[in-house]
Length: 470
Ligand code: MN
Ligand code: MN
View 1 (cartoon, helix red, strand yellow):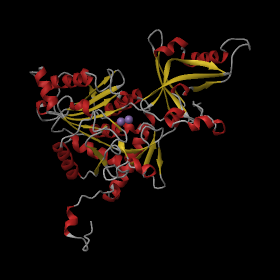
View 2: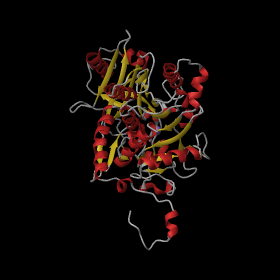
View 3: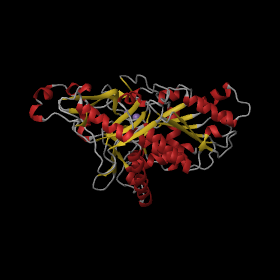
């Protein structure tokens, strides 16, 4: 920092936003680039909640984590994980302090907006085989038109065996798409409100076009698809009823910008926080306080369901850990651990986009490259339904990050009354622990190609590491 002699002494009193790159030396800049190479590989290989859990599990096992159910007592330095229905995961490193002093917890979510196949998806119309979808999470539907989609998921067959399906990721493999209407014939559509221009029931995926059998065979385009599916996976149409197939963008994560300063890719909300938190917990030594990382499902649809943050899975898994640390375990001990814990709700926030500057309040909006974002509150229409972090909690994290050299900024989700959103922070806070939203700012959030700054990704990793070891 050079001293500007012209400056008034009072200028020192003002808060100044830093750009993270300015604060990073060449060593840290190249560390961020290297970190993001691995992050892109994770992002490209974990496009669904199941794939993210599988990838996280591999990462944790390589780092020496053992399945929690296989352990008896836990001692400082022990590393364990537990998986809930292949869709949620909790990892923990046991600390030196007594469990009753509380845990350091990071919660992120592994689900992302997408198109899900309906239970009875396959039909034919006008000589085409198509698949019906029901979108998952908050999407702008037009973004999902005329882009290459890959099919990811699992089919549980009538005999209970599971078949995993991934089509459209390997070079040369077919992809899928929902065709958009040509502009030449879109007069009526273009006159509609954007929210109504693409009806949910029109998000039908092109699946096939070569018929089987004689011309008078009924449903011969649909039957042709069934024949192929049977050949590829040994499944029949009824098996699709017990399937979870997701259509996600087929493209890979990529560097964005001439200087490769950004990562572009699908699913960065919230897998950018998933990966950074995972790396942070996997690289820990023996912490003072027990560290816990929660990867929750269903955040994008309200955190309900037994794999979502509202599920007892979180408390149950915490109880399993506490009971292995405390000989005289009882419910009160568990409640004390929860209420003495502190948590970061690791989720993304909106980055200021100069193309749409009017929806942001610039003094309080996060910037790409501004560092990891501390979000005091989310919510909408007067902070409704948010966990508004206490000033004391903001102060603790600010002090921690400042002392650890973590570049951070504050963020707010757009102008007052412009819209809003939520995270799992309020659910974590309901266990009486202190919680702060802390994650990476994105442009194009919930789109098929979200943008993050590599400096921010790296600062999230650095921040989570500092938090877990504090
Ligand atoms: Mn999110
Ligand atoms: Mn989201």
